Image 1: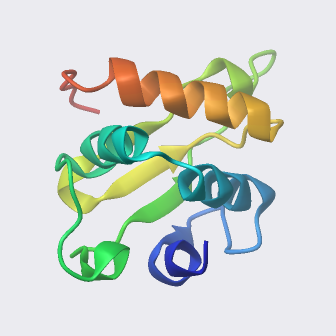
Image 2: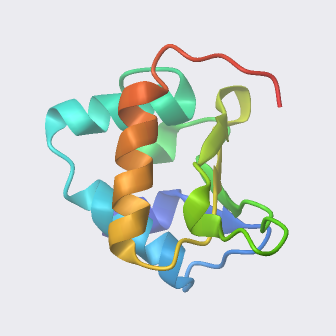
Image 3: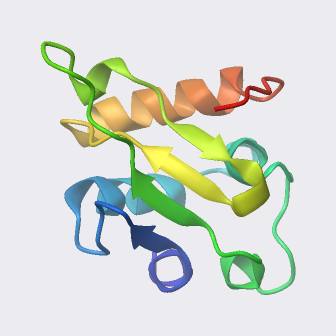
Length: 118
């Protein structure tokens, strides 16, 4: 997780100490090679990292808080989204690490061929 924490930025509502950001880093540290490939394709549009790992990504992978939905909806009802051209992951502030894992894994597997303008 040290390489991840040193090379993935938390911004716009998240800090490096935010629980949800830390949960994401822990999830990523546990990825097997196939999950790593799926996550990279989802988040960056490429199935592998450049030389230097996450430190070689230009621009760096940046995780931002996805805007909270209007009540009575909760962030747990929404999926993460990305801007692959900017290596920008918009992550709702999920209530637990388990919800985050479920939503990110679903996005990784189902979002492989999706292209939407947002």
